[in-house]
Image (cartoon, rainbow, N blue to C red; front, side, top):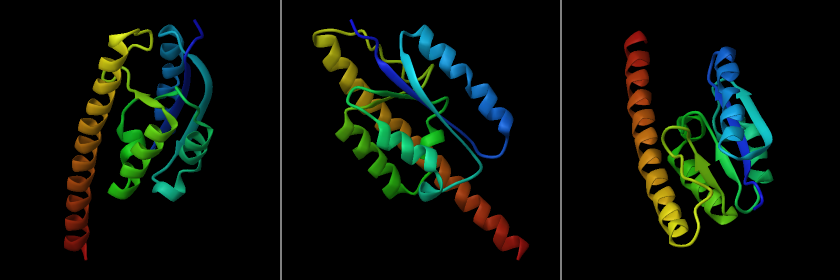
Length: 151
């Protein structure tokens, strides 16, 4: 059986030490049986267009690839239309997302277990995307209120 392919996406909003912590993902991915073909690392706050490594990852994705991220918010702190586009790209490319400890859906499943895995992946991804998006919107609203007070 061919080893599944993983691509690791790392994004630290402000602290470069976060990237070093996320390097442990490579070791964990290999322990889960993945062949890690690339790691895409970015630093700093950035919107969709300001994340060249995320764009590169999406361009590089192949059918059956798995994107491994430490936290889903590493790829979902985006405007809602971009999150929807991201999910569409993942679906169109036949890629999945794995978040150790949250979306660890076995790539070794066979037969009916594959249907269950794929259904669970889609459902959990939507739930987590919604949660991340809700958190981001609430945080943005609080920040805007603080800015208004400061003005």
